[in-house]
Structures are given as C-alpha cells and as structure tokens.
Image 1: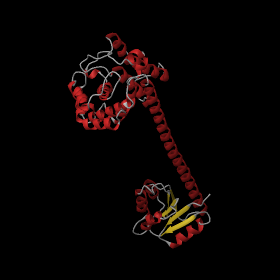
Image 2 (image 1 turned 60 degrees about the vertical axis):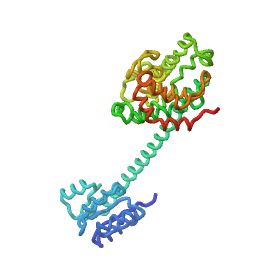
Image 3 (image 1 turned 135 degrees about the vertical axis):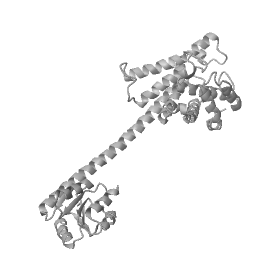
Image 4 (image 1 turned 180 degrees about the vertical axis):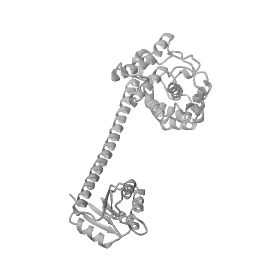
Length: 373
C-alpha cells in the first residue's frame, strides 16, 4: 500500500523536526511554518491525507487556519488533528466544534500520536471507499434507469407500430403527433390554469403515452379498418369501438402486471405505470368533443382528460395533412382553418389557441417529417 501523506503545520522548527522524525518512517511528510501557508501547501500534489495542526501560531492561529480549510470544499474532508500546548476542555471543545477529528496535547507520547494518526487514516480510507462505492452505485442506477427508459420506449413504439401495420396511418404519424402534443403542452404550461397539470414530468408522460392512442384499431376487422370509401353508419359504430378496445386492453395490461390488488392512489407509482394509465385515457377519450358530442362516453369540456384533448387536435390535424386511403391531403392552411373553426365545439378552446400560437413550429414539424409520395 502506498504511504499516506501527512502535512505538519507548526511555527516552531523544533516541533516540526520532532514530528518529522517520528512520522517519516511511516508516511510521506510535508511541513509548513504558518497558517497562511497551509492553503498553498494543500494545493501541491499529492494532497495530504491528514493534517497535524498547531493551535498557537502568530498571525493566523490553528483555529482560524482550520476555518480557512473548511471553507474550501476541495479540502473540507481532509482530517485535521490539533496538536497544542493548550489543554483546557474549552480549547478541545472549540477544536472539535470547528471540525477537527482529534486534539492531542503537548507534551505528547509518540506511540499515542502514531496510533491516533493511524486510526484516523483508516477511517478516512473507509469513508473514501464508501464514497467511491456510492458514486459507482449512483452511476450504475442511472445507467440502468436509462436502459429501462430506452427499453420502455422501444416496447411502446413496437406495440403502436404493430397496431398501425393494420391501419391506413402514415409512416410518421406517431412521431408527428407526439411532437405536436409536446409543442401544444409546452405552450399551455405557461398558462396559470395549467401550471399544476403540465409539469415537465407530466408532459413527458403524455408524450410517451401518445403512440398508443389508436392501439384499439388492432381489434377492428380489415373490411372496416381498410375500407377506402365512406363507412356506413353500422360500420362507423364498429369503428368507434376502437377507443374502448384500446382503453380496456391497456387497463388489462396494467392489472396483469401490477396485480388487481394494486393501489392506484398510492403516493409513489412507477413512471412506466403512469405512462400506461395516461395511455389508457388517451386511447379511450381522444374522440370525445369539447361540446359533449363525441364518443365513447360523451364527456364534455374539462371532464375530458387533458392528454386526450391534446391528442384530439394533434390526431385530426395530422390526419388532414397526410394522405389516407379514404381521402387526399389537405393543405396546411385548410387543415389549420378547420382546427380553428372547431374551437369550442370539437376542441378545447385553449388547445386551439395554443395551436394557433405555435403554427410556425407545427408547420416546421410537418416539413421535417413529410410523407413519401
């Protein structure tokens, strides 16, 4: 094991000589003769593992010197042992109060000094080892959290992509609607009435849940789902069930994973579960209308979950501005006019206001993720 480095601070050359002779067979020893020289000595490599500090020194005494050491975070964890001719209880208490790890009075017994130094160095090595282990554990936890987030996102994306292989949705529908929702949510976040509903974590959860909005279409028969023309009233009633199929499927997944006894109202809830619960709301309610004329439950106004209100605008706008088997592509302006025209009827007026305020950014998203002809 490499020798530890001890810094001796004393204004008396005789004391420095005695301590140096005592310590140098066991440690690397460095010395300085004033409190003011200590910080400069600490900056030199190698940094000392322990400081032996005299109390009675001119200009800057040992107590003030220790205060200076503790002011610097870089040096604050170096153990400091006072060696002093002051032997009152009050002097010792003052030293410990300032952060010293020990207080040795003169004249000292060499064996006791060596043993105390050894004990404090062992404590420091143990603390350093524990700190290193904790740092490693923190990094490992963060690495695994990031891995889990990546896997979680991949699974959500895979499931939504599988659902859309049976649909007429376009290649970038999922990514575009996610970006539209993010832009709208970030704008609404600035409004006082949404400050409690749209934290950064809330927005992240909604954006991650968005790809599952049409997962229920996997349960719709092909002759209805892929029909190029207008659906009959009966077919449309079947098509509408994709909301309940999707919501129920996600709810069953949550119950199967977490158990039917899981308390949904507990304080700490896995973020992945929160994403699925948000996805359940979006899948179930993204066809509800602000006026109450939507489906499946005819919810009205703020009774519709905010995430579903955001998806309602994003989904309709994306459907209008991209080619589908049952329709052509609308221009940006025409689609934008429809969204604005449905303010307070199909869509939440504040979400439409956010859409109008962020039209340039929405146009840029559409431009950056176009569909191939």
